[in-house]
Length: 190
Ligand code: URA
Ligand code: SF4
Image (cartoon, rainbow, N blue to C red; front, top):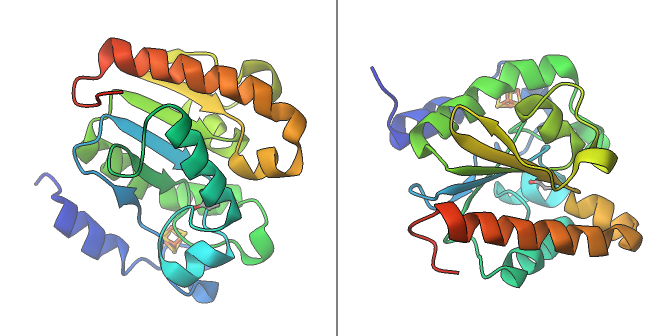
């Protein structure tokens, strides 16, 4: 039978499919509008997200909110999730085995949401969602189409905190995202 958001959320909240279950405080399922046309995908929860159970609530999250605001978006107009739902200890990258164990949850979220646009935040998400050999430095801001869904990747907000020189390129990428939304989205008035 097809998922409902309620079923999927309650199932995910019991997940022990990988070792990150042992060290997490909270599962970070996702946040936003369940009818959003735009899905943003990060890498995995950090410390603040693990404590609060909500994606992108720390320093990177503050920057993400500012980035959304630049193009007239906020958390009521998008859905935000991560490749892995539990925090990798010490903020290391999620291991392949953890990503493989967790990706089914995101696939089921995506099937429920049926977004028109998927925005990958950083290299890890882009490799899983767009293509295995994705090069974030060379290919950020480019558009890819998969099964009628428009996809792009931008630098992860944490990378923009570490290296402000990447911000002008990201501004251009955000403008391209805004243009794409204006072109194909119907319930986002921006
Ligand atoms: N970084 C991510 O990739 N995801 C979050 O939810 C927070 C920080
Ligand atoms: Fe389950 Fe994903 Fe958490 Fe691993 S990271 S325990 S697969 S929800």
